[in-house]
Image (cartoon, rainbow, N blue to C red; front, side):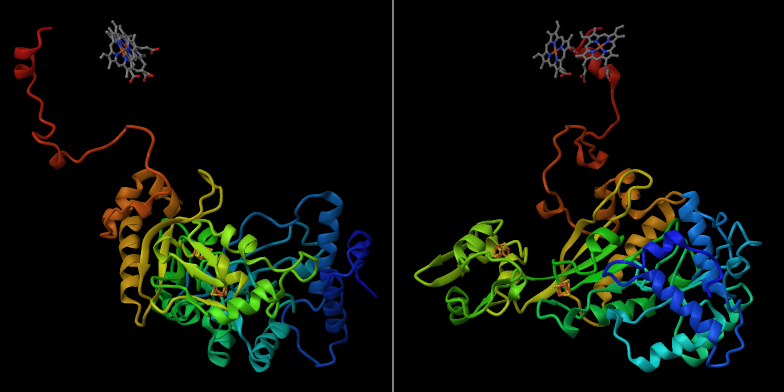
Length: 437
Ligand code: HEM
Ligand code: HEM
Ligand code: SF4
Ligand code: SF4
């Protein structure tokens, strides 16, 4: 018997998509029965009260969480998002409802034993509810009380060898696409570098030392399966320098209909017979492909590595062998001064252990931004305020045409004094000798 009436939420149990309401109800029932005989460390009916307060929020069309909340574990300055209900008497089960961010493995591969380990801790010391995963990547343990935080942290670290994720003005939990683990487009080992850099910068992740938050994300290729270009201040996107490898026999097999275009991604609708000219050659953004006498060729010098042709004919076209990555900086959501996607900083950089070249770029950016960034100013905004030129200087990057989509159209151009013969010192007297007032 449910603790609260939830007529609005009950509506969301209808329909084909997995219902979060049905799932929370199941968890509430499971806790009520308590077959495992747990000595629950937070209210047994926590999930019931969560449904109760959510139903109230649906009715009022207002949230019922108080503002903010500062909780955590000793030694760290982040990792836990504190939260308190603004109707604690009606819903005592969620009077405290803190969220614990737990650092996920790169690529989010698990075994059952590990996940059971997490849930054993969480069933006892938390609500039993989770988010798999937070948008940044963390395993999110949703809802516990303050006294349980150190207990959970102790068990995560001592029993599961697992740390917390990041929150606050620091390096947040890095994330990556699944990369070479099961994608033939991956130009570098996204999981390896994500894991290595997460370990290298643990201090920056656990103890806020930055003007604002900072995120890393690693995409194995320009398809952007972890959306690093939109969702990380420091985005690493795999690419290659040499030729796309073409298997002409397999190209013929695509043309003959033996392979499905886009690996069958459009098989839900009849798009007609595969037409390599219409679907690949003419779609190439740089028009650097040709298909003549049954032979596909690509003018590599004009290929921008957009991925389109590889995506359409994955069995016939492969990434080059000289692989590496592009570094882009400054992506952020709208607040304060407008949304930004990342801007290209380093067109090609090797991605090899121990990643010294990439770490040098990161650390140069941090040295600059940590000094110059204003309070709660994202890297992207510092770049706007101080100029892209400044970012190039601090990262010792030579300006190249690839740094811009188009050159500036306004003539408000700053020169450095030493670039200008004579400098800025102005001899008014000499001028007046030539030009009378
Ligand atoms: C080779 C000679 C000249 C050059 C290269 C020149 C150039 C310019 C430029 C670049 C502007 C700004 C246009 C804008 O803001 O969109 C301007 C505006 C103006 N010029 Fe000239 N100019 C010249 C001669 C003159 C002379 C001889 C006069 C007056 C006797 C004059 C009067 C003005 C005025 C009043 C404006 C402002 C117009 C406005 O704001 O609508 N200019 N000029
Ligand atoms: C008391 C006298 C003057 C005042 C109060 C005045 C004021 C202004 C103002 C407010 C602007 C616009 C600035 C801006 O858009 O940021 C301007 C622009 C301009 N003025 Fe004057 N002005 C004066 C005299 C003159 C004279 C005598 C000339 C030329 C013989 C002149 C030529 C121009 C020109 C060419 C511009 C356009 C500059 C540009 O677009 O970059 N002004 N002036
Ligand atoms: S971003 Fe590229 S390499 Fe990574 S999973 Fe997606 S398609 Fe594969
Ligand atoms: S990767 Fe893109 S730009 Fe390069 S040849 Fe293929 S379609 Fe053209």
